[in-house]
Length: 209
Image (tube, rainbow, N blue to C red; front, side, top):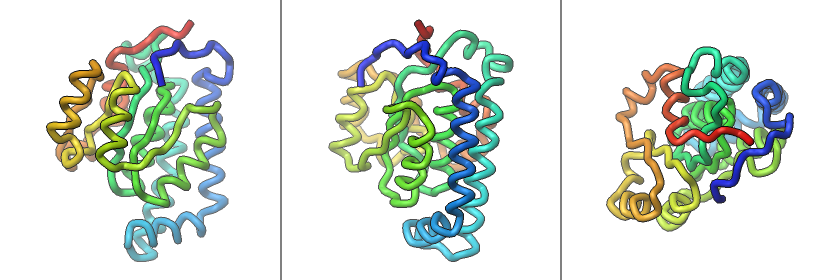
């Protein structure tokens, strides 16, 4: 992934991103039982917790679909800007990962998600099917892959990744000139308001051409 300019194609518009997210929410809801089972197995939780995670995921996707065409109205940094390509070291839990992915897509970022969960992979597959090619992809979260990934994007979102953000990764980012959103505590990340979560992604924002 380079820092190629974003296409002016209408499929990249805020309204299109909102519709794409709504489509993804509908697909997750349609496959609710399958997702519940995937979350239960991948995250080793009970059925009730898995149901809560999946239902919360649908609500999260819908909420970010609503934000997609409003961010430039409420975030001055988002006016006529698009976030740079971003690598996301997403939260381990399914719902937290959904929030990280959908916030980046709603803002118009092209993102690569590093995660090991089969349930998160299934979610990325559903979301990716609604967006233009390469809008969102998923890679393994092993240290070597993450270090290589950090050198191919403009921004690394490590806010949920204190354990991953070791000296080797910090050095790789510094050598590549990759900007970093550094780790936050789990409580601070959970308490981060939607607009604060997404505003940080506009560090180094580009103007579509």
